[in-house]
Image 1 (tube, rainbow, N blue to C red):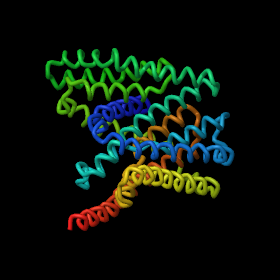
Image 2: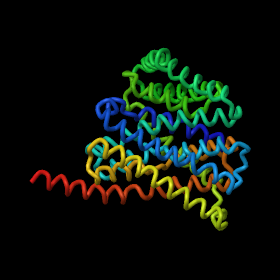
Image 3: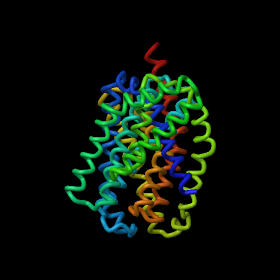
Length: 345
C-alpha cells in the first residue's frame, strides 16, 4: 500500500503541475506576486518561530529542532491548489477577479512549497550544515535550469511521438513524471519536486492536449489518490488529542496557520488596493491546505522529522482549513458582490 501510495502522490503532484496556468501568472503579475509573497512569508515566519518551542513541548523525535521548525514553516505556508480550484469551480468564481488572483497565488505557493520541501528534506537527510544547505540549493537550481534548457525540448519531442493517441500520451506522461521524480530523488532532493517540475513542463510544452490525459486523471483521482489518503489516515492517531498538551499544541498550530494565511493574503491584497472583502476572500481561498499539506506531512513522517503526534496535528490543520474555505469564501464574496453593485450605481 505504501508503494502504490507513493506512486499515487507522485502522479497527483505531476497532474497538479500540468494544470498550472502560467499565462494566468503573467497576466495577473504584480498583484498576484504581492498577495502570494506576503501569503508565503508571514505564515513561513510564524511557523518557524512556533516550531522551536513546539519541538521541545512535543518531543518530536528529531534531533534537530531547526529542521523541525523549518519544516513546520513550510507546512504553514503551502496552499492546496487542487482544493482551491475545485472550490472556485463549484462556486462559479473561477473566472472572477478574486478567483483568478487566488489561483495565481496558489500556483506560486505550490511551486515555492515544493522547492522549500526539497531543501528541508535534504537538510533532514544530510544534517543541518551550511555546506549541505548550499548543495541542496545548487542542486535545486540545477534541476530547474536543466528542466528549462534540456527538459522542455525533450518533453515536447516525447509527446510528439504519441501522434495524438490518448493511450500513448497517458503512458508517456506517467513515465516522464515518475522518471523525473526518480531523478530528483537520486540527487538527494524530494521526489515530489521532480514530479511537479515535469508536470509543469508537460502542461506548457505546446504539444499537450488536456483531453488526452483524461483517463490518467480519472485513475489517479478515483483510485490511486484515495488509496494514498487511506494510508495517510492510517498514520493519524486521534487518541493523541486526548493528551491536553498535544491538544493545546494542535489548537495553537491551527490558530497560527489560519491567522498567518489570512494576515498575509489580506496585507498583500490591501497593498494592491483591493477592497477589504476581496482581501478576506483571497485569505479564505488560500487558507485551504488540503492534499498539499497531507503530502508534506507524509514526507515529514517518512523522513523522521515528525512523530505521530506532530503528524496528526498537521493533518488536522489540513482538514480543518479545507473545510473552512468554502463557507468563508462564500460569505466574503457576497460582500464583494454587494460592494460591486453599489459602485455600479
